Length: 320
Image 1 (cartoon, rainbow, N blue to C red):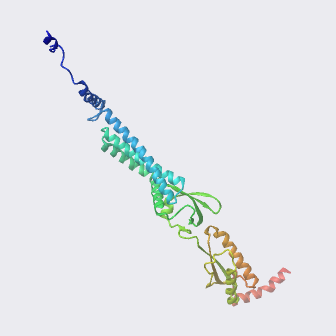
Image 2 (tube, one colour; image 1 turned 90 degrees about the horizontal axis):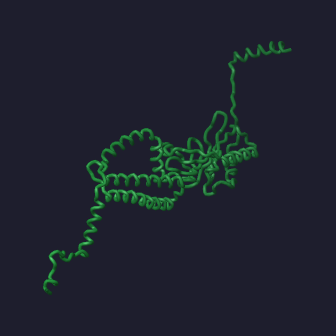
Image 3 (tube, one colour; image 1 turned 180 degrees about the vertical axis):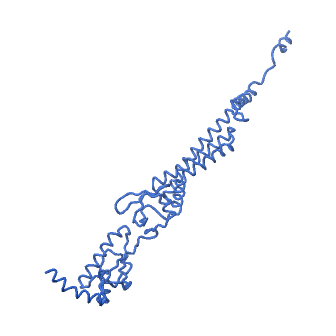
């Protein structure tokens, strides 16, 4: 009887190893859950795992975009590029590029064939490129200006025969300010493709010239001495360079002289040029030197002179 009680019952199941087999069964359940087919795209089944992977890739693209934008912004600040328009435009370009790249990788994880998508995108890009050709050209020019640093905010330029100062530089256009206190938006392609004179590329020194013509009967040594003394006495010129006085040419009505001095602020070129001309005027006037003006000498044929003399008495009688 004791043996029968201690012997295992035929209907009683053998002891199980539930605790040892439970983790593997849980993992199998999780595996079957995440790999369960939800739907198909083309020939590829879409599972919760593939969906989560695609979402993680997109989120990583956004996070990496934010990190790279902060890195680029710090780099631009160290290079002296602090324009909000430039920094913002470059950050947006980085963001859109990384997000689109993340979306393409996520789409490939979901089984979307990128060949057809890229082919359609290429056709759209070509059509869009023709429509946005000028904008793309200005954008590329903006990148060139940022890399070369040949034009910077604060530079004084001669653009289309006008003196302007660069206020802001963007990725598509540059804002300049004229001497009339007007804000002008200049496409970046205009600055890259055309010849632009930058007065402050390496230094601020600018040569100021003024020309004056004196009559042929003037004492030329006195003229030269007067112009030299006048230029030396200008307290607003750059003292590191001596003025230069040149006799340029013998004109039709005058002997032409040129006075050259240097200034430190090209933006004041127009105002200081006026002051230089005023100084030349008063210096020559104080010395009694006549500034020439155009003259025309008329020589008549002797027969014409004789005819005029004969007609003169008749004209006087008619007037009386």
